Structures are given as C-alpha cells and as structure tokens.
Length: 506
Image 1: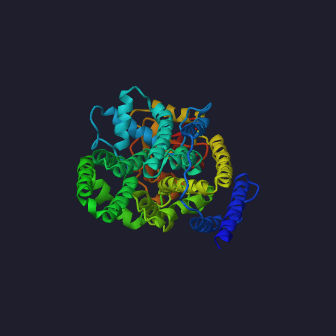
Image 2 (image 1 turned 90 degrees about the vertical axis):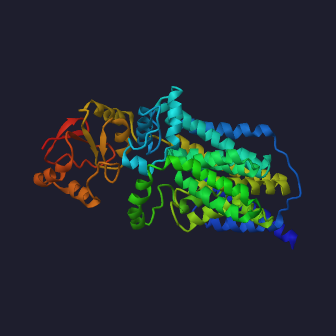
Image 3 (image 1 turned 180 degrees about the vertical axis):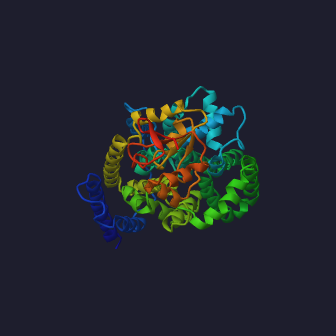
C-alpha cells in the first residue's frame, strides 16, 4: 500500500511540475485545470508518504542567489526611469513632506483630516529620520523601498530559521525572491505593507525567542505603523495566548505594554478614526482593499501551493501549533471567506504561505533528494521567468511629460486649488502640484457626491456648472491627464491655461 502511494505521489508530482512549468511559459493556460485541487491532493498524498527522518544540509552561501534576484527585479523598472512606481506615490510624498515641514515635532492636529483618519504615523516618523540623514523624497520612495524589500527577505530568512531550520530559511528566501505577489506589492508601492511585514515577522521572531522587550517594541511600532497588519498580529497573538496559558503572565504584561506604548500616537485621532468612520464602515460593510483577488492569487502561487498545504499539514500532524501556523489559519479564513480587507490581506497570507511551503519543500528533498531537487528547481526557474517578465513590464503610471505638467501647477497662485476629475491622477496632483487638491471621493476638499460628479461630467449648462462651483474656493484649475476622458473641453466656464490644464473663469 505504501509503495503504491509512493509511486502515485511521484507520478502526480512529476505531472504537476510539468503542467505548471508549461503554464508559466504560456504553452498551456493555467486556467485549464483546477490546479488548486490538484495541489491539495498532492499535499495530502505527501503527508502520508514523506517522513521527517533524514537530514540534509544546504550551503549557507546559497542565500546570495535569491538576494541578487530580489535586487535585480526591483532595479529593472528603474533603469532609465526616475519616477516611482505605484498609485499611492503622490500620497506618500505629500504626507512625508507634511511631517518633514513640522520637524522636530511629530504633527497631528496640523495634518489634513484624511491623513489623521487613514494614515498611521509610524512610516512618517521613519521618513523624518531619513530626511534628517539627508535623503530626499525620491530616494525614499525608490531606493529605500528597494532596501526594505531586501530587508524583508532577510527577516523572512531569520524567522524561518528560528521556527524551523536553515534549510527552510534558505528556500523561504528563494520563494520570496520569485513571488509575483510580493513583486506586485512592491510595484503597487504598498510601502506601509512592506515595512509592516518586516515588523510583523520580527515580533513573532522575538516572541519565539522569548525576548519580551524587543517583542513589545516591535509589536507596538507595528500598531503605530499599519493597523491592518496589527490586526493580523493581534488575532494571532490572542489565539497564541489562549493556547499557551502556562505563559500567561509574560504574555499579559506584553499585551498591556504594547497598548500603552502605541496609545499616545492615536490619542488625538480617536474621533476621526472611530466616531467619524463608524457610519461609513457600517454602510460599506468594510471593503476588500485594492489588490489582486484570491482567484488570481491561487494561480500566481501554483509553484509552491502544494508545498504550503504540505507544510501546514505537517505542523498539524506534529501538533506544532506555533504562531506562524495560527497566523496562516487566521489569514486564510479572512481571505477565503472575504471577511475584511481580504484582497489586501493576500499580501500577508503569501508571506506565511512562503514559509510553510519551504517547510514542505525541505520535507520533499529529505525523502526524495534528486526528484525533489529537480522538481523544485524547475518550479523555481519557471516562477523566476514570470517575475522577471513582470519586472521588465513594470512602468510608472505617469510619464515624465505629464509629471512635469503637474509640477508646473506650482506656478499657479499660492492659494489656488487643483481639481482632478479622475482618481487616476489625484495622488500625483496631490503630491507634485504643491496645491490643495480636489478629487472625486478623496482628501478633504471634495464637496460633491458621486451623483453630483456624474452630473458635472455630463453637463454643459453654464448656470448649473456655475452653481455647482459656487462652494469651491477660487482660483481653481483642472488637470486633465492623458489616460482619462476630457470632461472639461466643451464646457462653459473654463479656459485653457496650459497644456492639459484648464482654469475656472465664471
């Protein structure tokens, strides 16, 4: 029976590997089969076939290879390009420079309401420190972020090593290097997510080490840095607390200490964060967050999906209910059942899937040294091909020509407002125009509902337009970008100011 299972497993592993490689090279469609079911069956077979009774040793210098991969795919988009990637670029620039203007103090009530409500101070305390070291904003948005990507890889390595072993840590680093999900996180400029993952992992590393003071400090900074990531931490740590009641005293003291350290950074923001957001949260039922969907995600991780299942099954089998396994279960439930911020939480899920998959891959290599090494190498190389291709095609959302036009808005009157008629350009106008920005559903100066914006788009009635703009402060300009509909061109009350810029004149 065992021999039959073993042979079946080897055949299925071979077939799976070939099919995934073919799909990654676009020879067959990855949507041809239910690969996620295939991966699940493969993992179930593996848990019965593979035994953890052999030792292997990887060369420690192997870590240099994935570090070079990480650096390479992050640098490629910036060859002959000095515009930061991502949609939130202008938002990060605007907030970071607002904090810089208030040095040496940390601003709070001086900030725009939308900043106090939606953007924790943790990242911008760090950017203040970088400004003091003579970094400029572009260097922070490009080069320091690339450094953080490398640092995240190293933190994944030390965390996997702490919980498991160096072999698992090395493969974790390889999987992080070829993860399309993590590259997209970088490409979309999810700066806080990337930094928060570093501190989420560090907090679990220190908890595993029972170093409670650095654990409290890293967890408290996580709370000040990124609330969604701290939610993952809080849920996982709560379950961990209940499963480890013998250590209730240091865990309780740590929990209280984290709250005490983080609370002062939010004391002046409680009204905006809780009271003012309560009704919108209820009405919206809390959104998914902007990122790839779970359907897309499962086809991006086919190279390591069966091994992630295997790693999780292995820990359950060993009754090793460590905080990484708890994190995986909670994160998977949030994403799979679409409970809260489920698309954005895919980023966190991918990190713990990478670590668990590495555990599964090590188990395979222990039992099937040559077959395991060959199949995993094929899957890694196929994934590397995809992520390099993604890197080559990664481009900023705006051209130098358009960005320079937006920068020219700094030459308008100091008290002028700039309107963007689409969310696509809103962050760029906010960050680079040097003027107060009006944008659909964003920031503090939008006074129209969605229905009113649609009415404005479709209207050529001078009286109506004049009435709608009566509540806006003048002078007022409108920027119309290359990648949007020009809603202003044939409307009364506007004259051409410069290329792609209109001035309101009624």
